[in-house]
Image 1 (cartoon, rainbow, N blue to C red):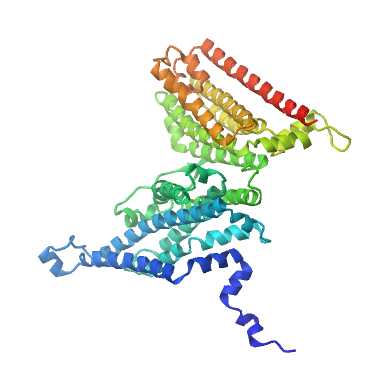
Image 2 (spheres, rainbow, N blue to C red; image 1 turned 180 degrees about the vertical axis):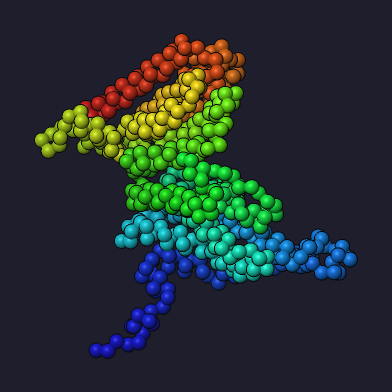
Amino acid sequence: MHNSPSDSPKAIPWLDRIGNWNPQLLREIRGKLKLRNLIVAIGLSLLFQMLLLLFYSQRIPIQECYTQMRGFGCTPSWQVWWLEQFRFITWTEPFILFFTGVYSLVADLSLEDYKGTLNFIRISPRSSINVLMGKLMGVPLLTYLGIGLSLPYHLVSAIGANVPIAFLCSFYILMIGTAFLLFSASLLLALLSGWQAKFGGQVSAGALVFAFITFIWFAPAFMWWNIFTTWSSFSQVLVGGRIEPIHAEWWYLSITSNIWASHAFTIVNLGIFSLAIWRILQRRFHNPASTLISKGQSYVVAVYVQILMLGFCMQSSFMRITSSNSSTIEFQLILLLLIYIPNCFLFLIAIAALTPQRQALLDWVRFGALVTNEGQPAGLGYIIRDLIWSDKSPAPIAIALNLIFTQVLILIWVNTWTASEIRGKALIVLASFVLTILIYSLIAQLILFLKTRNPSAWVTGTISALIFLPILIMVSLSINPDRYAGLWLFFGFPWLVISNIKFSDIILAFSAQISVIIALTLQLIYQLQRARMQDT
């Protein structure tokens, strides 16, 4: 029996090869690369290039342009003429890629989740990485095509402007790395069940909101971070003027003085955050009801983010500033505030990501460490270990451990400060932060354990009220932080009172917060024991 030529590996169509490697990518290719879509994508890309070229045809550096003074003025040379076009394309591509890519991924995957078709993809024998990579590569395929068609124009303008090809390679490497991180985050956002309902099922409207945030925040941040660090020597190319690079250090190691160090720092961090997101995607894809992140992963992420932020506070230039007694207190408190604000967001996200729903808690009560039988070990040590590592156990213990891991690092840094007065104020801020986050965590866990419809919305509303309502009420009632410092500290606003708070107010505020924590903890234990008794 002879094999026909059509059965040979060389005769397999390229689409079939893609299908064998990644069926989801083949599905997206067949859905996106239709004639109408191709015409629109290619047409828009070519139209953009033609309009840009027509505009700059009015600025050609020829003698007639100078004598007639027509158009938008002439460029002084052909090199500048090409440089302006290169600069325009360089600034435009990240905004287009990030905006359209985030929008298409969030809208596509959210629509499949909202309609229920994503469940059919979940039962595929392929791995979650294979499926989601197919989505990431295939959904923004028309955007990739449009950007790819502009590459020749970009390359020609770089050559005409005498821009080093090495810069062009650096630009595309960092843009692709940042796009991979943003697109991975978009996939994760789309898999967060329930947000579509907040937009009344209007998936496109929700995707547009997230794409707009990317457009106004992440795309400019990508450009300006690299202009001041990685591409500082090419600032003349990108902004038309010389920009002195920021002399940034990380744990006293310079990351801007050397182009290789700045590239390595940026690329490594993009890779670490992308890897963390893909670990969460693997976890969330096949088990949408699970917590967003495991407790073990949360410890690693919290410590890494803390080390990353503290590293930027370790600058040689900061040591010269803090050596001056007149500015030490203000400057070091500002640094602490710059760490305090991201930590607030970090731990609010951790509460949302680690707190299990009611059903998971009931499963833990029935089958977890609280169960005592012959085949299951019992004892306080086993219960504590389960509270630390089990994803179905209550979250406050994990939140408390994350607080210990992160705040100990900050305490070590604070202990290096020379002024005892500022160290005392920093300790008040850190203690208030820890106690306030623990209260939020216990309240969130108690609410999610209740029999209510849409408990996540109740948690969001309650925590938001605890953050914003006290300050609004106290401001409206003219409760001054100077006179009622203890009350402001109790509600978690230490920055407004640390300058002149009395020791008695500190004791009263912290005692009240600890009392609330004890009461909430006892209530949570009571609810767990009650659920256990009802089950038995």
